[in-house]
Image (cartoon, rainbow, N blue to C red):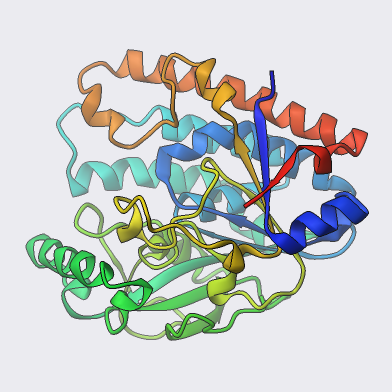
Length: 355
């Protein structure tokens, strides 16, 4: 039974068929927003970053938003496996006994952030010999920049309605800001027309940049005036780049590896509830998507990816939720082993399907 599904854009599929896949072939690794959904591929990431990429010699740009940014930051720690374990466990063990509020989410979010950055994590991340972290946030305008949750809620409703008209619906509401390792600036450009700014990471803004990248509106506090990025309120990069799509802002520099919990990409946060709004293969031309298969989820009692909504679905039943999520996390370790086996055997191309 196969746990791993492989999908490839046209150029990526051609590359796999002609050259196979080796760590040195990659031009970047991407990571999606999705909070607890990441737990479904935690073990895959552990295998890729903790083992498969260890032989690479050249710098490798990384890009993610929200939990994607956090997992990539954890991957840049000296002990990659332990850092990813800590992050996954922190996600799993979140509890909200007094209800979900901004203060409660801030408390749990702080645990996640401290687990990634604590004990010298910032220095390790910014001095990794190979990996080059970059993460996305947005500078907000209008009601999205307000500190008032009610105004934010109304702004989100307005943004969702505007988004129905297409990808350009967020124009004037957000600007993309890419925070990056100063040693290797990423090949970023405003290919989708959204104002896009790059800001170098350093010891003074790393925590703020990561925090902003995961700060969803209404339920979390925005981050103000990040050093190097100028004045403004910064929020979740997933608002614009929910499942970051290279063709929207990343100049084609080669093969992009994309471990993902879904076999498709939803470009923006407000696309989540629109079944038809998926990124076309033309924007994922050089992208290789690795994702759990239907068989993977059939082997779990949960039967799907873990989700933030599980805190409400299983309210007051934390032990049950934690156990269900643990099954998915444990199976994700087997997912990682399957990838390593296929990569070692040079058999990835035979399993790949077109996006």
